[in-house]
Length: 348
Image (cartoon, rainbow, N blue to C red; front, side, top):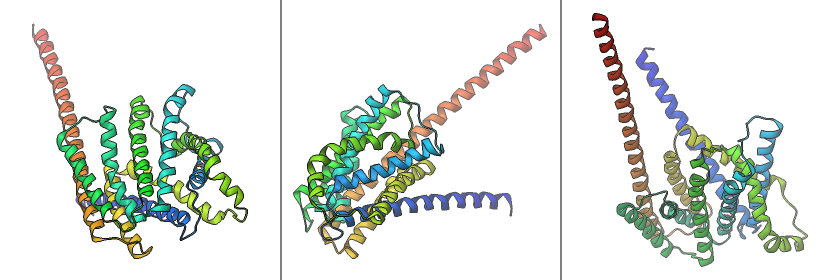
């Protein structure tokens, strides 16, 4: 095979690998969402204890991360002082714990399809909080795009057959906490040059989550679980569920590390449509035409937002390349001028 053929084969391999990473992430994300719904829904497995489920996930993930870092020493821990841990990691852990608690709670009251529609508000929340903390600049066209996404979600909510106000409040709260967490990661960690992979992230953040979740658990769920003496923890159900949650964290790192965050956003849209189809066809949730129309509007807004972010990244990359080329050209010119002066001296 010629040189051109070899290059084509290499490109094809990269494309296939990218699609493989996307497929793995979609599968695991899909599985975790449906599995959580199955466990928490009163009409299915009927174990409506979202704080307990989140604590089981965090305990499992923290134990595995500890074993990988401290016992098997497969991953190097990040050097972190106590002050940095308390000021940066603890607030992120608190936000993450409340985000997971509220998002898992929403599965008790809302359908999988409607929850995915509400999650379309994530770019709106991230942008708004980013502007509030001066990590994003306010732009009229971007804000108009955010309003169009919000309008689409509002239409989808209007068309929801089994609308539950408390469930919507829980899911919107989860979106707000998750968006704040993403912005805080930029402010508290990334800006300080701290990069955490999924293992080190779980190693530091999961114990914080457990502490913050333990407080409401004692007052909200523990008394009910204590009085429900007939319940026995199913290690197969909760073990496989926790393992899927841990694998999803690894898949996120794999997808973003090997492709880009934008690829994950696009894959997330595909996953949402798959979940809506699954929710309608398998779980038999009601999906109305108004639901789909509203989510379609929100989807177009999110797609345009992702496209704008991609164009901005390309423009930034192009400016960086131009600046590097100008710098190299300047150095080359200085070198040539220096050589010219040296030649004149030699002739003299």
